Image (cartoon, rainbow, N blue to C red; front, side, top):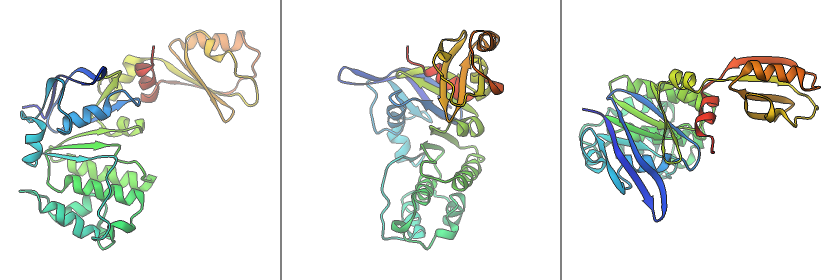
Length: 294
C-alpha cells in the first residue's frame, strides 16, 4: 500500500485554481521534498494531505484512507510553519501532554533526544528562541509515532547548528521505515536529505524524481565571474543565457549553451572578466528553470 496518494486532486477557491489535477504516489519509508515558488500550490497541497482542506476534485489518501481518518488513527503527524506554543509548561511537560493523546506514542526521552531538546527539557516553552520553538514543534509532530510525517518549512528560524541537529533527528526518525514529506525553500536541504523531489508550478506537477535526475533533466550550466563596478547591461541577452544576476560585484549567468555564452562573453563584450567559474547547474538552477513563469 502506498503511504501517500494524490489521485487527480484539485482545489479551487471560487474562480481561482490553487491546485489542478495533481497525481503522484509516495512509497512507505521515503523522504520526499516538496518544492515550489510562492503561489505554486504547496500550502494547499499540504493542507489537503493533512485533511485541513477537502479537494474540490479527485482524492487524497494516506495508507489507503482519507487524511482525516489517518490523522484520527495517529498515523499522520504534522509540523506547520505557524502555531504558538503554550508558554507556561516546561518543554518536557508540553511534550508529555501531547504524547498522552496518542495510543502508541514514542518514549518521552526518545522524543526529546530526537528533537535535540534533552538539555532544554526544564525550560518553559514561553522562554524559547524561535529555533528552539521549532524543535519543540518537531517533537510534538513525532510524539505519536506517526507513520507519515509532514513538515512545512521545518528549519525556519533555526541557526546552522540547529538545522544540522534537526536533520540528524529527522533521519533517525525516518530510518525506522516511516515516510517523511517536507516543504522547504532551502534547496540545499532538499538536495542533501530527500530521496525524491517533487516540484510544483502553477498548481501542477513540474518535475518528480531524484534530485540528480531533476538536475540532469534541467541541464544547463552556471557561469560565475567577478564583474566589479563594470556595467551589467546586456548580460541577459547573451546567447544561451536563461537568467542573469549581479550581486556584490559578482555576475551569475545560467545558460543552456555554455560554449555559446562564453564565446559571446569574450568576443562581443568589452568586459574585463576575472575569476571565471563554470559548473553544472545545481538543484537551484534546475528549480528556477522548471518554475520560471512564461
